[in-house]
Length: 324
Image (cartoon, rainbow, N blue to C red):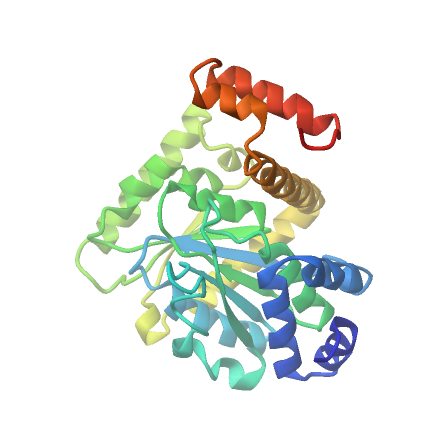
């Protein structure tokens, strides 16, 4: 099997199959994924725009992303789409496969890939940042991350994106749910899809009211510096994707002009470091507990509280002592 270095050179030369194999290695993690991260570091200056697309299931995210890819390619870009899907409980793979619905978009200039979440809280796999760097190293950009859109933890998309697009649709209660989940606080662009359906104007009005309220109360941090534009679209007919693309570019220009683009990217690196440290420490703790150490046995027998036991085990692990 070709080594990661060889696969990377072939990917940079335009071989899509080689890029697919590298993405699989990144997704599975471990030493090969770490090697790929090191290989692409000098080739990925983190200059490619990263756009996060999130929202409830059924709002038309995949359809809009397909049209956005066409728009981006039409303005000279080579968009790459990473669709983060639910993990199969049996195989651990991405249930939705390689997003067949988006295949063939942008006359082959776009690269579409699904990635399983593997149960990672927040719906974003830890492999996502590495995959985005790999895309950039291979000459792709802008980079789009479409999240699964389940649960309040979808606000985690902001950890990965320069610009976050929140999608909603009339008749689904999305406006209220998004407000509860805090999505309006992180939205840079808001899309009300299926605008041809009854209730679309009401949804927009509700969103405008929530944005106004957030600005007055100071609850919406982003609104203090940037008021998200609300765009009405009918993605099934391709209507409005151009306006969404324009809004995304306008937000990026705003970030660059105000110096917040660099701040967001530094925060993203910090979060990735924290995620990786947390993952490593969690795996180390799990392995240690599997040895049934004395501290754990004390808790299991009721001689120590879980809190006291946890503190003792943490102190032990951080002391780098061999397992006891």
